[in-house]
Length: 140
Length: 123
Image 1 (tube, helix red, strand yellow):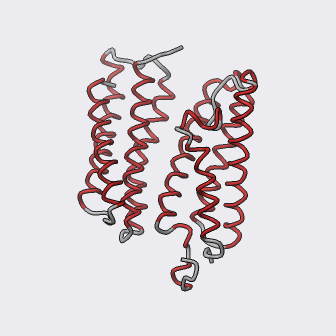
Image 2: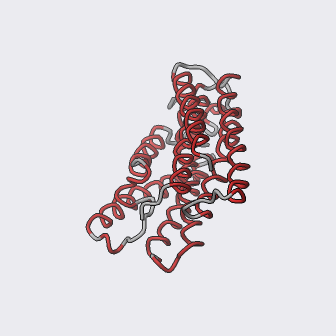
Image 3: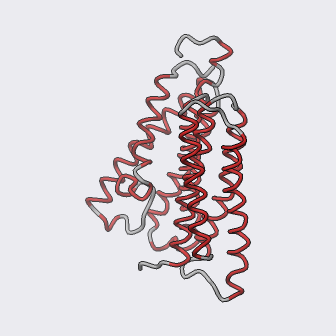
């Protein structure tokens, strides 16, 4: 896969197994956006920090999904940055939500390491970074 | 929402999802069977939209937040068509079939959540 021709290298990140990864990313982006839209519309005052975080997570997932689909080195870097941010986010928020539940009275996608989403938010950034590493330079 | 309809939808989604993932991992590109299973799930969701829109007028209103319910339902309706489109863009790949399966299973989870919002209130 590393020694691919220019034709097959084009958009290599979104081919084959990468397609499944992107779909899972897209679904998580939808889930996070849906939750965030609902939370902000329904009752923002109750937990501004958690709800702002939900919105931020939603934006990050959307950008990461786009960056995985779009070809080019610039998008590759965007993908690495957003996915790394996700990993840090799920670890920090996951830990904080366990240590200090008062800080997060409402749920976010990252609470308790993404338990409400079958831990997909914890596993996905790791798979995403591995996938990007395996396809480095293949995005031109 | 009608309880029996929830289980029909979960059955359709689970069967379709497992079928697509198994056939996909076995190396089959998207075919009439797997695309049809995903389309069947979409048909179910359209029925669910009609039922959920009419039910409150018949005295069967959601016990939870109607807004949250509709955010889930509208999102779920969008998923199968996007998965089918995305699968057809690369229709020679077996991973496209897996994509259909993942989409079906995601819809199953969402239908279950919609069921909880309509019928079950924990708080």
